Amino acid sequence: MIQQTLARLEDVSGPCDVWVITNSLLEATIKDQLPELKAEHVLCEPAARNTAPACALAAFLLERDEPNVVIGIFPSDHVVKDVHRFTQIIRAGVNLAASGERIVVLGVPPTRAETGFGYIEQGARVDPDTVPCGAVPVCRVRRFTEKPDAPRAEGFLRAGNYVWNSGIFLWTARTLANAIREHRPAIALLLEQIAAARGTPAFAEVFTDLYPSCENVSIDYAVLEPRSRKGEAESEIYCLPADFQWNDLGSWAALYEHSCQVSGTLNESNVIDSVANVTIDSEGSYVYAPGRTVALLGVQNLVVVVTDDAILITTRERSQDVTRVTKALADAKREDCL
Image 1 (tube, rainbow, N blue to C red):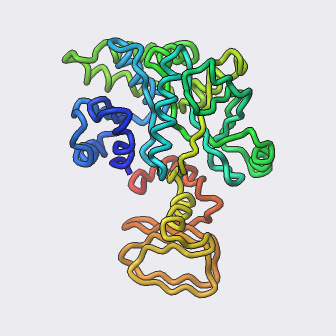
Image 2 (image 1 turned 135 degrees about the horizontal axis):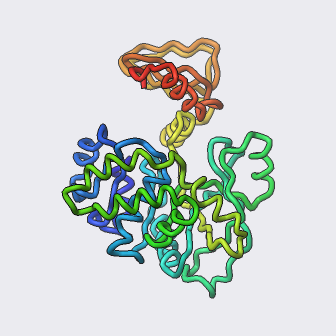
């Protein structure tokens, strides 16, 4: 999937301009998967600190030499089927982000009352003559809402002006760095020092010492939500349509749905990765148990994931809550299971 992420950017940005923020466990694998990347553009966080420090790290590093360069944030667990439309939307977003201190977000037209995604409430439609987006429609953003409960998600779907937050953002290095300075000054102070050390023998030590002190916070909470509270007319946040057949495979339920789409089967089907299986009076389950024989009897909508040292059993509806399991294991000092 990370190869696909890079491949669909080839018409808007060359590999020499791509950066990957990851961790040391994945560094060798990513460099092997993406040999066209510059080795120094694969940055390994000394500690996981969520998306705000990761995105802002790139902004502060680039701002020193290229403050007006447009940075796109592209999570590597996304599926995009219509790459031509994706390219068209990204190009329009780049032009908009480059035209001022503007933040561009991509919103996915919702198909169901999903509780596992964040939502963007769209405001007024922008006059196409006032923004450099060509024929791509643009709306101002009123607010962001993270993972609503089911009744609220149903209300969003009925309202018609809510879209899923794709997690794809565009802004100049200066715009993002200034937003961090305004809304998360403590993070900005640390990243300023890290960026100042870039290119010196002290960089690795400074990065390792200071980065873990950054607040563990998402870019949505750190920047987008407080910026949107200025009001849609003042926040300079704009939403473009992510209408390019997008899916986020960040949960087992999403992977199940994607597998059904790829195979052309219905959502009532079972998706089973195993040596052999027997299913009786069972439907809608996702099972990952390579090397095993699996039997399903009288169950519906389960997620079962079998690895060498652990087994996860949940429902598709609750698969977004797996982070609660990892937190419980961490609290119990069971790092061996994580």
